[in-house]
Image 1 (cartoon, helix red, strand yellow):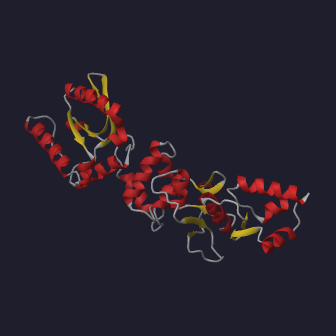
Image 2 (image 1 turned 90 degrees about the vertical axis):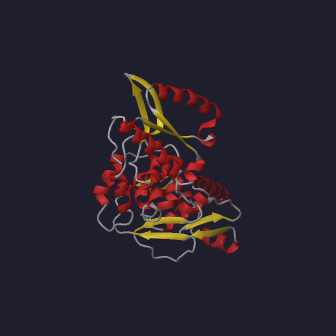
Image 3 (image 1 turned 90 degrees about the horizontal axis):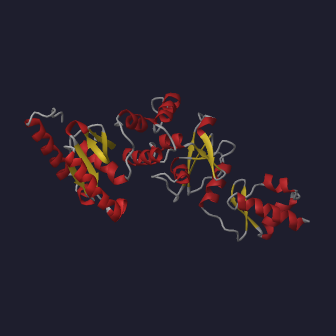
Length: 314
């Protein structure tokens, strides 16, 4: 009978990423003395406060995160870079474990980063694979406390591209919890205030390109911009300055592939027939800070200005 109950507990542990609690022990019907005897015998081992595993049973990163969240109490949640990793977001990290909880009263662990807060709304909590964690919106906001603005923007692009969050959800979160001084809110507020129209960047190099052009004094281009001519759709380009009819494309076999590059050639010709200038950007350009790219854009813009087309506003 005891072996059957142990098997049931082991199956439950598998569903919980390799770990179980004393509550699980009671719920399957094992005696209170069972866990003490198995600990002494080395049959089970402590993972963290409140969490155990069977000796020899595999324990992956998700099991470690779940154990840490349990140790944080009823409001313990994976957060920041750990939550980002659970969602598969840019900036996620599995090297350390980060949790947010009301108060950490237990032993300190070198591999844990603890964020204590008394102000945590249940609406900001969710689960991924049975692991309590912060929502995508709250995770993005919290990343501003531990990552650079650029890294948070890469994660934001990633989440928007995958429809994991909306800008309206992030704005609502800021209105609710974004008081002055709260870690992360300043980064997110600035990203939302300065965000240009259009879809999110398709890749990190594209976002870096936009940031570099802005640093060089150009306005931020519109990302994933649709080009129309005489009522007909021409193309969607990585970035564009519609006011100057300049299309910018990040050219990389890594992101586009050979077949797509061939299609890009036909698209480039269509853009030029529609009166648009085409500016390619390579990985080498990005590594060089896009200085030559910015110079090319300015030259095209200035030629248009001299010919009486539009106004040079940067």
